[in-house]
Image 1 (cartoon, rainbow, N blue to C red):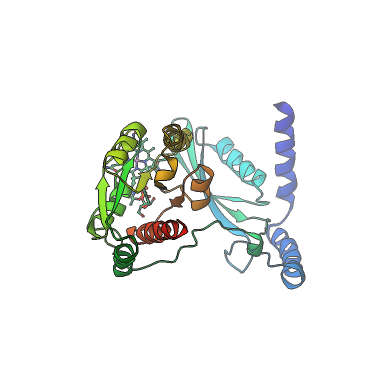
Image 2: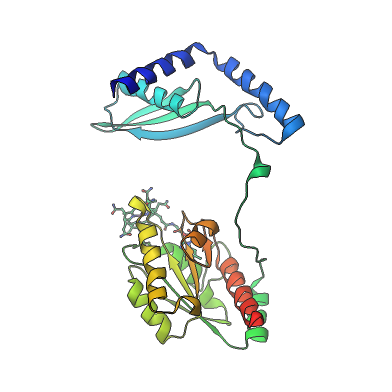
Length: 283
Ligand code: B12
């Protein structure tokens, strides 16, 4: 521990000697080279292009004071900010302090090298979705949804299901092509699967908002494992949504699709309609 302490202090001292503008200039020189000749390397934009300036906030388990402020500054250096400024410090409890740090990061990123696993399905409108299902599938599609297990947050799943919808988009209950059943929150995986069977659902939509201690991973894995154990995994489209969900993450957990913050029923309905049609055509 004491060795780590010494390294930390030395690192802070070394960075302290480096003027803020020098750190930026040094890094900007290398970025120009890369930008022109190698690849497209970028940094965040603060005052001038590619200066790397960011603002971040965090809480430390220390009472507010000079030691806490310095600890926050050193911690920001360890995160790759050569000369951070503690722009704001506030006590949030007897033994906890909240900080806002302002500083320039030296790291760069090449957006051309970033691979994003996104849904390839295009977005159809309300009428196109209903028409596609009616003409190609020839029946109403039953979709069933819930916030599963311990999760009590209903606003997200309601935004997707409720007829009045969200952000100017109708919810699934409004689409004539869907029979949409929203079971609400804190529904066990067992109960959701039982209901999906009895209602002859074609898609199961689950919401997970709380991610503390990775509870969402536990809950989401439980549902897929249960479906596999009961031999019904391939009977349904398994869809998950929530503020910390991405399509790539959903796939990792064994789901067919994942929807993150700001999702609307139109996007989800477009996916369900096109995916069910594609599966039907594949036989
Ligand atoms: C309202 C709220 C509550 C209400 C919920 C009331 C209700 N009926 O829903 C109450 C007070 C009950 C609550 C309780 C708790 N909450 Co709360 N809550 C919130 C709050 C303020 C808003 C959430 C919300 O409604 N967002 C609006 C909706 C529209 O957004 P959304 O959920 O992201 O949904 C969109 C997408 O994610 C997606 N989506 C979501 N679900 C689905 C599903 C499908 C199938 C699809 C396709 C898409 C999709 O589409 C939606 C529309 O775009 C957030 C903070 C915040 N500002 O987000 C905290 C927050 C989610 N809560 C939090 C916590 C910690 C809790 C508690 C654990 C607190 C406690 N210690 O008791 C409890 C948990 C209770 C439980 N067992 O689940 C944390 C979660 C942190 C984390 N990462 O885990 C947050 C982020 C607050 C925070 N900053 O700490 N909460």
